[in-house]
Amino acid sequence: DRLHPRAHGGFVAQGSLGQDERMQTVHARMEPILRHHGLPMAIYTDNGPPWGTGVPNQWTKLRVWLLKLAIDLIHATPYHPQSRRKNERFHRSLKAKVFAFAALTSHAQAQKAFDRWRDIYNHHRPHQGIDMALPASRYRPSLRPFPNRLPEPADDPHHAEPRSRPHRGRALRRGTADPRHASDRGRA
Image 1 (tube, rainbow, N blue to C red):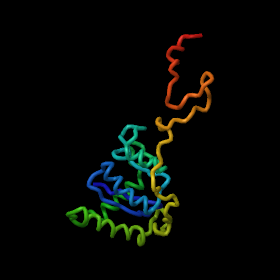
Image 2 (image 1 turned 120 degrees about the horizontal axis):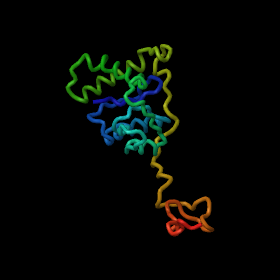
Image 3 (image 1 turned 90 degrees about the horizontal axis):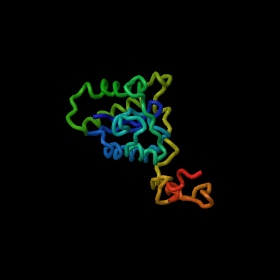
Image 4 (image 1 turned 45 degrees about the vertical axis):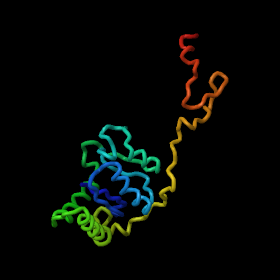
């Protein structure tokens, strides 16, 4: 099980312990967090599911959803945990302070333990990485609200727009081909 925190300047605004890392699970846990705290410009993440496929430049359903929200996914360098040191440090602290001391028997119990620790982490424990300030003193919610309706893709072939330049005296619609193109090959 992985915790998916939403962090900003060391502040963990929310965290949700999930039973799996499937797109539907992560999406269902992220949407209320994004609605409450606003949309970040980007999310820095690893390359595994549901964030990525492990193959560069491949799209997941979660990535498409986030891009419709104008949230960029910044993927860490594969097989290089040093590039994700803040995230790795967060999970190391979480394991050492929450999950190492008690036998947690349910997800609900684990979530309660995390929520208690999150309060200490954000409001009572100074962080060296931000000059011994409390993360709560640095946090500002995003000014970008979650939209009521997701935008549709701009290059939808069902809603083609005229090309900006004519082709042999006539305009073609995007996504269509000139039916004479194949017969034109080889002509001088």
